[in-house]
Amino acid sequence: MTKNLKELSEVVAQANDIFYQRHKNIDTLMGIMDKTLRKQGINADAITIDCITIDKKIVLVLHDSKPDLVDIALGDKAGVIYASTEHMVTTVSINQLLTIMEDYFIA
Image (cartoon, rainbow, N blue to C red; front, side, top):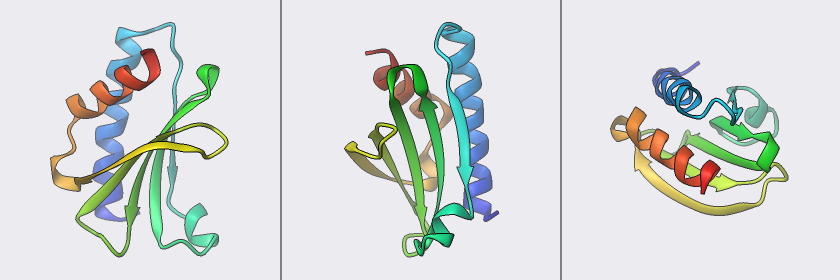
């Protein structure tokens, strides 16, 4: 696991824990894809936050070609992406992810 993936996954896990404490009726599932994409020929790692009951997913993608950046995509289980933004890895915070989760999973 790369340093960026490890650090970002810790931020995501903390945001996910806070989200669950605030919204106990909304279950989310966090996943780390550190080999899956590479086996498909994609030079990237990803972290997913799934909200299965409403068929929504947040995917954070760390591309090898952009080591200082992370793409945060909003989509569904089928892989349809509705929106995507790019952020500096070092600036992604627990509060920022929590806001994204609340806006996307609750709104």
